[in-house]
Length: 361
Ligand code: GDP
Ligand code: MG
Image (cartoon, rainbow, N blue to C red; front, side, top):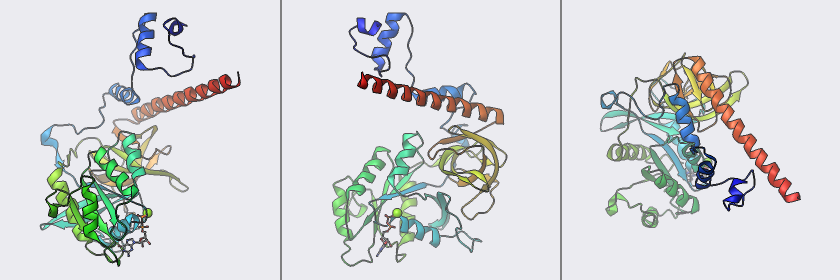
């Protein structure tokens, strides 16, 4: 009614802009504050004295962590094959059997200038996973490897992947794949990609291009080296390993024997067996952690992906997680988030019904 008098023709269940809400508030003597879901969540955590998203302890507390890499590119250009080849070629010492389970991410050991280094790969190729996580405010990826088949060239999803990486401010390494194939033209790929702001180092730019064959296992080490060089040149990858763990859930499902199982990527802090944990609107106590070799893990440091058993329900892929002091706090945060989700769903339902009512009127 008030809005009608103000000349705003809206129905009771229609969404209105912030400005209109504020106007309505002024008119009715309320102070209206519009809060985004992100802000609301930050306030929720603050009410428990928790800040999510940054290492605590200042500069001195920071220690180097491995880069986290996502592989993107056009369909059939070799993303899955590349992730498989890297996984097989770089089995950690003492793990003769190799990686035994897909948990959504894995780490490989490699060498750069005589130093042993780790790289974390997110094992679900494609920009869907990448954007889903970003949409939830979790930036899991440090570097994007864009795979381009040398016999096919730059395709629509190549461009899309580049756009996503650039929008997220994530440096790109280009893997020019399938160089074993007849008709492969790696120079043409370099040429094509200049149009998208990716100029190869050898042409005076600052993007590393690496010619590989995922199928024939050619120059995979060169690619890993390029990833580390790009990380060292462009990024300051450090985190405080001594705080309570925070990060993101990469994958989660309900396992028949083990219950809810979630692969989380630790982004800062150390995740330990026994920790009270909350991921999105799921919570629990870390009963057990296993890695991609199905070995038990007692402490997971920053950039380490690990499968967590002990949630009471299944978190969503892309949900952020954090460790809290007490089970009670984890439960309360999860319940408050559940309530919020329910409210949003109810509001959406209500809106749908009303619009239908209007239609039939
Ligand atoms: P994705 O859709 O990007 O995940 O592509 P896949 O990894 O499934 O690869 C698509 C096809 O290309 C498969 O048949 C692979 O075996 C093949 N392939 C991938 N990498 C190479 C390569 O380096 N050389 C050749 N000749 N074939 C490859
Ligand atoms: Mg694939």
